[in-house]
Amino acid sequence: MSKAARTVFKSPTALVLDHGVASDLGMYLQKLNVTKALLVTDSVIAGLGVADRIMKEAEEKYGITFAVYQDVLPEPPVDNVYAALEIYKESGCSGVVGLGGGSSIDVAKAVAMLVTNTGKYDDYAGIDKVPNRCAPLVLMPTTSGTGSEVSVFSIMLLNGSKAGVVDQNISANIALVDPQLTLSVPRSVTAATGLDAFCHHLESLISVNASPFCDTICLEGLKVISKYLRKAVGDGSNEEARYWMSYASTIGGYVMNLTDGAAANHGLAFALGAKFHVGHGLSNAVMLPYVFPVVAKAELEKVRLIGEAMGENMEGLSDREALEVVTEAITTLVKDVGCLLPLSTFGVTENDLDDLVAETNTQTRVMNHSTYRLTSAEIREIFAKAL
Image (tube, rainbow, N blue to C red):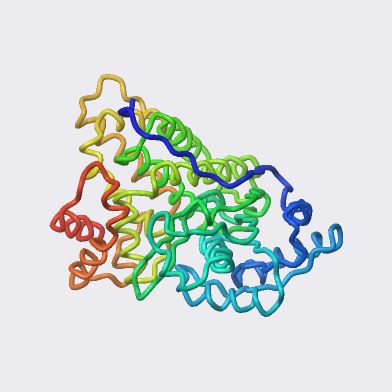
């Protein structure tokens, strides 16, 4: 049981999770008095025809028109925000729709923020710095990973490093989570984003900001992902697995709100993403087997709960044995879905370790959430083991 803790629950105005809810986009935009929306997405989603289908239905049923920004990059630079914002203003839009993975959704949040708040993205980087509620905003995930559709975070690459705006004022009016939008997601993306969601639950459970409310959701998320991620990776058309992965990802976004973000694993992953442009989900996945056994030493009581949620038999184990069993279970999950990759896969060498440590140490927001504070020497050792 967590210590007594202050609990602040931040969320979008509404969440709808169900097969087929993407068809209701026009209805929700109409309720928000949006007649023309900027749809923010990436070239992959646009190329699959998903965006066109959704926009066509909203226009035919509800008369909504759209402008489109489809150039969101993985690990998006802040320039993506400014380019999309220019289209919003030039096209006379009155609301924003984010459609895609966490990158597209984070860009959509930032655009909606800058519609109603003057200045630049970096003026609002940090916690609770956004004075005005953002423009009307509907968020629709096509992956099951970040939970960004319900979170209060927008993460961008700013001057070569990860920076984040964290504020209730950039949360969505409506989060429409349609598991059918994830059916065409490639196996590798399903795996990496699913492990990102796993990290959200795991890191929040052992965060300094954990609370009983948070713990309950985290253990549920770990249980669901442990059961369904392999199924979703093995057969992307499995609608049951896709539904439950969407569910776990979305509630993972809520726990991010409850703990003000992730912890140490995300800190090292942010560094890997910034320096070697490894996707966010995959960065978290490849670091997890190496970070967890170090930081979990401060949370041995919760390690047992993690093991039970993952379906492991924890009865009769010593604390050290329990940590070894859970570490092995996590490593096996990462391996089973194809994400147990050495850092050398991404071009990392021993000569890069000091730079990765330095970049990790700039991620003070998430690193300070860990109940086990990693030293620079420990961070270097973790990266070295992951090579």
